[in-house]
Length: 149
Image (cartoon, rainbow, N blue to C red; front, side):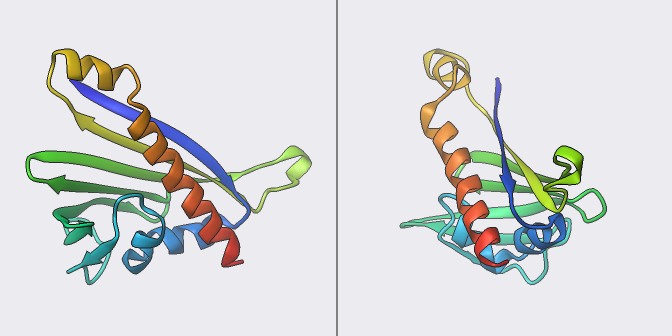
């Protein structure tokens, strides 16, 4: 059974500025929830791999998709047998009569497979921990992008 958590945030920064931020792996620990350190990634290109750390846990990751034209970045992270996907999709936010047209809307889709059974049903019903993780990631990204303007 697959479970997906998706939220979006509006950011007062151009899509190009936000894209530059999310494709800079050195900045990921500043805004990706539970990713305190990233190493081994020379360039954010499809197929590139990296290691990440959260507390005393170390995981592996890979860049699955980088679409600069459509501004989509998709990552996979793995901790043991637990694999998660993280997709960040940036759109230009249009605004009423073009007010706010330089702003961005970022959608974050966080997904993973869960086993069937009681735990699977709980997670699929809306695990509050993962919902909060997605929200916190987007809020950190928003603060970082807006403070860089």
